[in-house]
Amino acid sequence: MANTFGRLFRLTTFGESHGEAIGGIIDGVPSGIALDLEAIQRELDRRKPGQSAIVTQRKEADEVRFLSGIFEGRTTGMPIGFSIANTNAKSHDYDHNTQAYRPSHADYTYDKKYGIRDHRGGGRSSARETANWVVGGAVAKQVLKAIQINAFVSSVGEIFIDKPYQALDFSKTETNAVRCPDAATAEKMEAYIKEIRKQGDTVGGTVTCVLQNVPVGWGEPVFDKLHAALGHAMLSINAAHGFEYGSGFCGAKMKGSAHNDLFNPDGTTQSNLSGGIQGGISNGMDIYFRVAFKPVATIMQTQPTIDSDGNTTEIQGKGRHDPCVVPRAVPIVEAMAAMVLADFYLMNKIYN
Figure 1 (tube, rainbow, N blue to C red):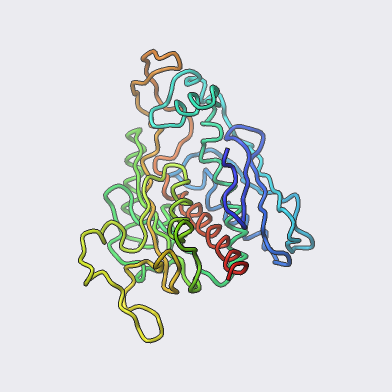
Figure 2 (figure 1 turned 90 degrees about the vertical axis):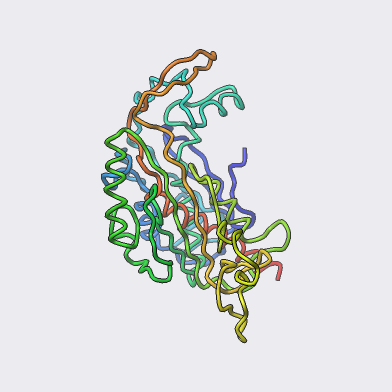
């Protein structure tokens, strides 16, 4: 079922969008780490629904309850169990699609694979599951205290930040509903999302993430490359449709003479088109990557579809949904990146 993420730092999760609760077990956390539980809750608050006018209005407190693995504020080295109650599910919003398949959702594939599906918000395929990942990532961040992890919305539709990340102030990311650190661009993005919502439609976008102070040497050759692990993590996020790091697809247009990162005497590089990773191993430079998210599949417009018997029918989205997923994806991207780095941190300690 692939409900576990990671090798040494492992997160195993459970729960469905409209079940009693979601939750998980975090294993592999070293003992003796002082956990700031309020900081973990703040990370969840960044992801939770209902936080602004441009996201789903489902009202969930998303309060995490820790069940094990912590004693007197410190990790014991034992599995950390936690749960998050579902308190505001409105299952009747999905009564219209008990048989019909929503286009571009997991309805059809889940039904064909398992012979059964939970039509209430998509069940296990719902982005509600990502709240568990944010808890795991928040714990991972506290394992990696020296590493800075900053994600932000870099585009919505055709609206892009036209500045390099080095020119941005990451402290401004949380000052607006879009989570874009450039105020002028954020204002345009928010207005556009509101316009799209009025049309009963949705729009995609990108999230950029920057990892700083990652030591040289994290990552394993061949099949455990650091960028491959980051790509796996990011493409596991609901609605993620693309991943690129460093120069990414733009690098395919360049000549090697322009693309090569020339060395300084101390081993740093004069440019960083490699994105902080060479040969699948971190080189000490900033690691930066971008994740592309498709438009949310649920739209408030009538669309043709089929039902479980193969009959043609029509369907229209109902209930509470995000018109654009990227503002709430920011803490999820950070969380997944943190868990990948925590895994390689532990691997580096054991194998090197």
